[in-house]
Image (tube, helix red, strand yellow):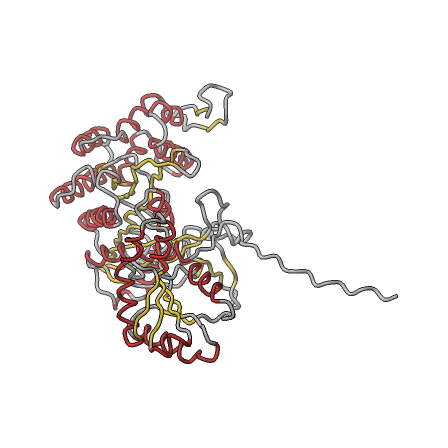
Length: 504
């Protein structure tokens, strides 16, 4: 007896880790967000540019892969000409390549914005995806602190345009030169101290999460997560002396008055040339934003801001949401940073061999959208779907299609029901699932009278939820009514206007 042929194995549908599928509600919310951000950026005179999602790996720079592991930090592949190509990990490095390649044709300073997905080959985690959206704005070709001040003001204006009230966000500003000056002041210059410098910067970065005494432990011998020796995980410290730790904490302490922060930094960094340059630039930015009416409740000098990317060379900025909320399980959530940037005077110079100053800012659209949705500042519901024209008589599909065409020509989203028209109930269920505001019905009787039926699905849902005895309300706002065929477009418009349906 012959073996029974094996049944073909069904392919399992599965989404790769660290990625997400997005439906109409999330996509529409993103679109509304992006348009508000775009409007602010264009108000400031920035113009759009697009670069591809892939670049030659050496152009990206920061995560330059080694021969053993070409995917270190980025997703990379080798082209047929043996060139390594990577998916972009941010939108700044590709801009630097674009400006360098088109340098002579571009106006300078060159002010541009761009948005799109970026990709990180990192371990996924809660709220940490391997593909996410950013929206950037950059000024290339100006070394003036006014360019940095303008970016900070634009970041503040963008938060308010997105519905985040004043006092619920802050743009924090620091300067990498100040941090370099601090490290120089405590004797951590030179290549031999690179590891300890990084440990100090990581400790400073924890000032948002830990009290100063806990950060002092990270600057000194190290810190136990449990608070006592032997409890929890241990984090190695930078082994600074108490006096050096005092210097670090004094300069990086948060202060409400930017003049006080500047004065303290000037005292401790008096012997550091790079530190003094950083303090001077911070002072200039503070004066410029204050002169434009941006107080410390919106833009604040904060010497504890570090920012992660290695290519920042001067001022750095970070937008933090200050609102606390709760997740679906009632646990407190603080969103923290939703955007940031800084000055990167070396990126374009890599291609040009000459100094090209640049500064920019990036909004983490995916992260900010999650925050706005949880805070109730962004409507996460799906938009209304199209008006659905149902098929009552199979042999009159051309008549129904003509109605659809009339609605579309009037600028009304509409579709003909293309499923099995046998059951009208199923057609209405389909319209409900499409979140349609209303459906059009025309049987042979209505056709003979030159009429159509319009079923207002939004009003119908309200009527179903209303008290049954509320006869007057139901009679004055009927959920289904007849009108002349010639009045179809006008009557549908009335239904849409009644419910403020504008499809975004």
